Image (cartoon, rainbow, N blue to C red; front, side):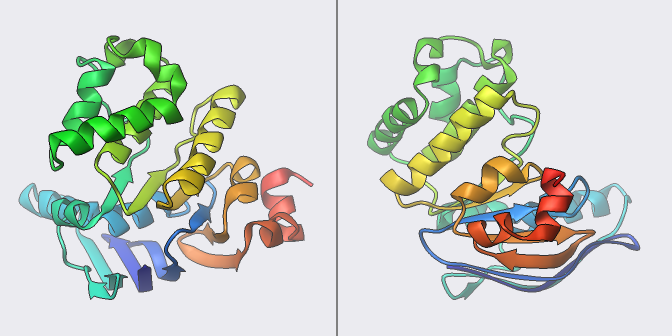
Length: 248
């Protein structure tokens, strides 16, 4: 479904991704695990196309130069130079870290705005699905998003991404800053996505313990470089992964 070949990303002279390649098959849940500043967000921005807009904005204001090498293919089509808005239309949707919601609008309005590319009937159908997936949001339909907890905002952010009807859903550090209970709820919801909708999911995280048991395949990334790959169970049993992420 998605094929990433020899991806390299520079911010000025700093190398954020170094010769990174990955392959994602349809229907999989794929994990990208790495510590803080390992290159996970840069990878997600590149897959979603946001890196293209970042390059344009930095060039306009005379800021740091962003250079990208390598290729990204989606369903056999080269999308390396495809803008993020066009990637969304193709079915690639990114849920960014830090709860990208509209704080002055309520939950229902946030979800409706996220479906601006879809038909009204599709929007209502998916919003109903989001409330089934995240029942904690049901009593909060009329609450302004800015007054919700971090975990509730994260559920809303994932719900907004789903309303865009993705074929490939990119989740960038969705567990960041959440309580263990909220992490558990979100992990269960991601498992439900695969079971009920068959959406392909790529999740980047530094918290390996809750992520590895639910993924089909994983990539360990450090300092922008791919260091290990394997199924979730293989990585769980790997002594290097246990030492680095579980303190064992």
